[in-house]
Amino acid sequence: MALLRGRATEGGEPRGERHTGLTWGPVAMLAGGVRIVADVLLVARLEAGLVARPVVGVVPGASEVAVDGAWLGAAGGLGWRF
Image 1 (cartoon, one colour):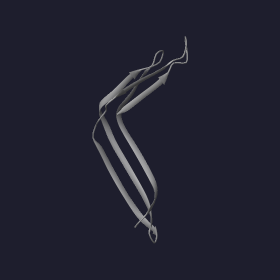
Image 2: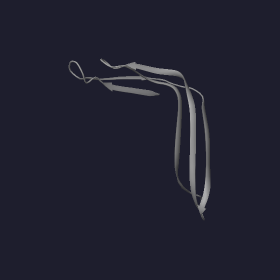
Image 3: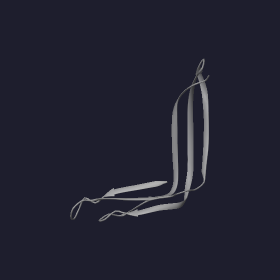
Image 4: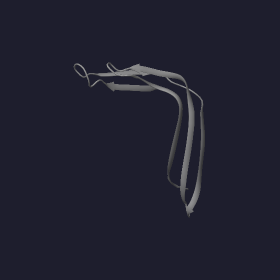
């Protein structure tokens, strides 16, 4: 699910617009962890994907906005092994 929001700030009265739609596509994920002290882990995750069904919206007085194309995400943190 994608939610696009925008606001025109030039020409006329500003107003918010929003568009909601379903998006999907293939995703690959790589995750791992390393023990740093006893039961404490340092964890990391890398994700990559490609939007196969984009969600596109138009903000009045502005360019088109979209959830489309390839994307990459990364996360890290501490974990406790129990």
